Amino acid sequence: DAKTTQPPSMDCAEGRAANLPCNHSTISGNEYVYWYRQIHSQGPQYIIHGLKNNETNEMASLIITEDRKSSTLILPHATLRDTAVYYCIVRVEGSARQLTFGSGTQLTVLP
Amino acid sequence: DAGVTQSPTHLIKTRGQQVTLRCSPKSGHDTVSWYQQALGQGPQFIFQYYEEEERQRGNFPDRFSGHQFPNYSSELNVNALLLGDSALYLCASSLYEREKTQYFGPGTRLLVL
Figure 1 (cartoon, chains in turn yellow, brown):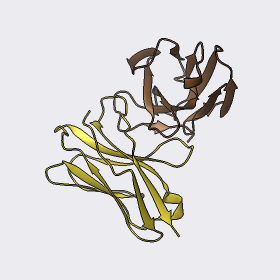
Figure 2 (cartoon, rainbow over the protein chains, first blue to last red):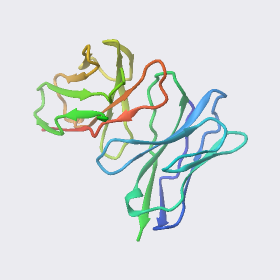
Figure 3 (cartoon, chains in turn brown, yellow):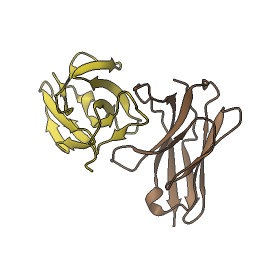
Figure 4 (tube, chains in turn red, brown):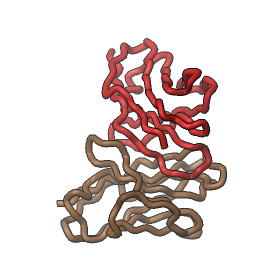
């Protein structure tokens, strides 16, 4: 699975959009970009994943660049409960392979 | 629809002891993966069970073993506990053949003294 690079920490004001970047320059054509988050001492929570088109669900939007070498997770209206570590993971969908977590980005939403 | 459940939530053991952790997958899922998360680090893959067999294994010693039952629930066993085994142990469930993503349980916090 391709390696990802994320900033170690970010702050965001409550009510504003949080934009979390991820670089994955060695991504292969059949690898998806997955985002999980982990609120302190809880299990990771799946957020969203995509291949090359932008994706949106009730939690977030995922923007993948045309060359697929980077992506951005967008939380449109961040709340205090969005404070968590956000993990960007690249892997093949449907392969039943393990998730390889990096260090993630600690997002702190400020009141 | 029940999500992934794990038991116990917390556990304290001493060095050299053995421990068994349990996981029930999300309803409809047939695959269970186990992860270890040390303090301040991301989860690390231990192994995965499907059809009652270990299908994949991460870089963990043989002291870590597992089992999957016919109802798809799973156990993680750790023998000869070391202080370094203190961690949050996470279970994730998925569908082996049509896996889109994995869903995690709340974890079991193990402290080895």
